[in-house]
Image (cartoon, rainbow, N blue to C red; front, side, top):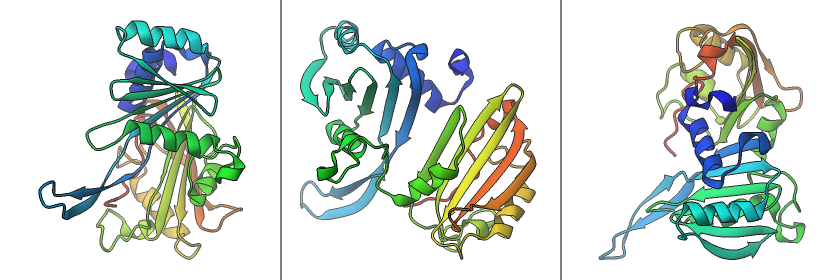
Length: 280
């Protein structure tokens, strides 16, 4: 995958740019994660102080796991930035660095990078990530356990997601297709999360799509199966070239449905999955 990242999507390309920023070769990695979270913002009128609206932004979070030399990374950041990088101490075993709107947390087995913007404080995002993953039990965390979200639905998605070179997922408030028109409304009713995993094997790829509903009653197996039957080779964004597929209910959670099948690698790796209407 890393040898052909010039042909991958923008998010995958971002992964290469983050590796380049810290001078970490792909062969030193065990895995790499690109994650986005909804960051809620309250906007106020600067003159009157009156509340204007609530909105969200999505900061990018990049995590590299592998075997690293923190001293070499610090030296590279210092050289590459012409001395503009600053050391910000340590926390939870990580060395912290600031470089423009980027924040880095570095230790010998993991590296985290967050990026700020006009609306988002990158220090706050980095603190959130480190707390979610490495907070001690007495702080409400998992003492190093693999917790990347505080939503229990994420666990159900990950349990069924399978394994593959490409994986992504999201959790969100329940969908109401009556208020949020979409093609084939029924299957989205009560939807609260989705995940996709692609296991590439040469010219073909094994696809696993997981959809999580608010309740087992919302998880309409026939509605999802009909949606897949109708769109499997029509909508290039959903299931292009999908064949030999099945839609089943999870044995562990009645509110979770799982689609598995095979598709052509050249088509499916560029597919983001079915459109989910989100206006939250």
